Amino acid sequence: MLGMYDMPALQAANDRFWTLIRNHLGYGPDHLTRDQDMWGVWQDPNLILAQTCGMPYRTRLHGHVQLVGTPDYGLPDCPAGHYNSVFVKRRDDTRDLTDLTQGTFAYNEAVSQSGWAAPITHLAQLNLRPAAVLETGGHALSAQAVAEGKADFAALDALTWHLLQEYTDQNDRLQEVTRTVPTPTLPYITAQGQNAAQIALAVRAAIEGLEDTDRQQLSLRGLVDIQASDYLAVPNPPTPNALLSNS
Image (cartoon, rainbow, N blue to C red; front, side, top):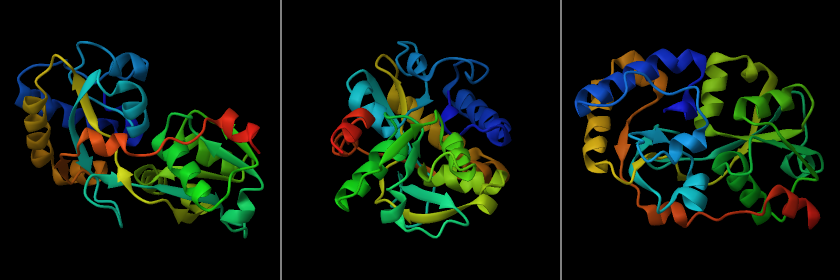
């Protein structure tokens, strides 16, 4: 399952990417999984390859899955294999980040590194926190909530923000406020019983074998090795309930 960056415009490229991985591996399902719960896939003892988020990895999956490698998306001002979160607001909104926190913060889910952990940690370092929060269920839905005035600001991972600008009208409706510090980006994982090194070789070969248009569309530059300890060192913020109960 490669569902973390699998909006409709990218599905054909992701399908071709998986086909290349499968061909190099010599085994695996014919098609990507798109109709199952992510947690069920991540914890499946027969999992060959999936992409997860840093926060689910460090809070629940570490010790139960193997890291395969971390994709490098070539994001601006980020080391290889890292990403950050982009705070966004409506294009006609003149408030700065401090003033925006007096309103409603839209987030995808509380176990998201880029949608919750990174932005809340960033705000805490500035002695700030949102006055109210709105859980949306997805980065694109958080962006939509801000654009429609249901929330005042949100944080999207940098690649999602790029993709929304590329394939939707969000660039006309939203603007960037600031960015968080980089953290390791969403890793590829496999089940404990799989050969992670062999799978990593297949992923690297597949990235190298992608057509230029697919590589550009998926923003894939390569696969890097980031240690589990680097993921585990990223701080976990309070839950939304705990954050608001202390306000």
